[in-house]
Length: 395
Ligand code: UDP
Image (cartoon, rainbow, N blue to C red; front, top):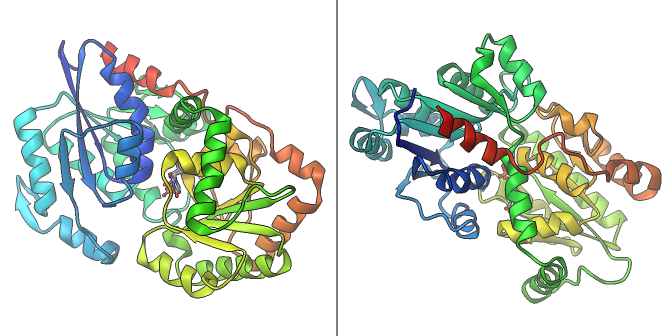
């Protein structure tokens, strides 16, 4: 399908995409018959700088898609504003079209499920450029949850030529949608590669010291007092905006007041819809530390050293398999069922009492805590990117 010296264009726009594609870029760069080009379509202006620096990626093309807080519909309108080659596009996308036209890549690689991933695949299709989809086949079965990711995945899948599935169950989802089995490779999730790379490249004790020093200096809290436990929180999913986020905040507020000896560390996502409610509810709670989004290295060590994690993130559900951390997932359904069946993650939804009940149970019940602390490799062994590069180099 691809010519001898292959030009592969890797495109990404958000923090999780950068983290998950970094190992793929590194593996492709090591492959002799591949010329890698990287293009950032920035949906998140600041959040991308850290993973780019951590993995030492200097994008060949760096394009802003300045959506601001305009919501999905006006984002769509922004992207689909001007006409080019039969499809409607905005200014940032026009630049991207220029790259495809001038560089003529043999393959475009995208990862995950944002609207930009789908749009990039759709544009590549118009240029008749093959598309590889990393983390293909995740399905919740509910088109509105996660929103709009579930549909973005399906649409991307219908365009993609190569499907890199993280797990066997993702492969089964693809087969159910009649994707040709010869176009699917089960590789493991590249987020485990990323986490392995950052944790291996650091001496654990040094990292731990730095982590605790950072919190002491920046936020005036000591996270490593004897018997000190801290709970790591992240929550920013669109489906939870409104009632869900309000419930989550109230659960944390009440837990913090009932458990004054426990610190809650919450790196707050920059989305204004998230920040508003988080700061409104939690900014004056003494044992809740609200931080800016943290760099990936720092965040990885924070995950590893926390007592448990409360999150609605997709990537974190996968990462905790590698570190063996009990994780309560504040979503009603998950497209990552392996975490639940292997026991690290438990779905708790966004009901205040349920969240509180499960946190208290994990604090009180050692047996359950131990069971949920086991590591497993259901999401991969940390070598997914090599497998992906190998498949691409063979084409
Ligand atoms: N993460 C990070 N700093 C933070 C919070 C998260 O580096 O302050 C990392 C986290 O380890 C994971 C990724 O960002 O790899 C998850 O991103 P997010 O939750 O935004 O997206 P999702 O995974 O839900 O798509």
